[in-house]
Length: 93
Image (cartoon, rainbow, N blue to C red):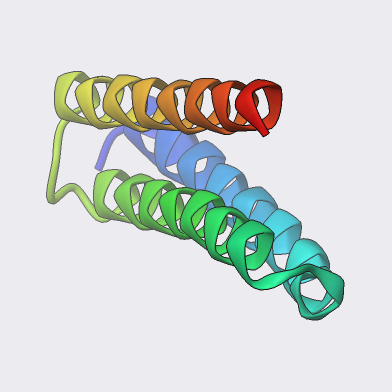
């Protein structure tokens, strides 16, 4: 494994760890939410967990940087759509 690849793998693992920490920090807060908000928040956190897993796949060499970028963009699009749907629901309520 080249030095550059090793550096990128370590960076990907750090990114995955950061996402895990965000999820671990936010997860206990869900108990205080009403059912609908808890469900939306859990879906949001699930997207972050999946993205962290994609970073691990990249670090292990199972996917390339192009695929990681594609998956990351797809995750960001889903998160944006969730926010838009949530905002629209608040406005109509």
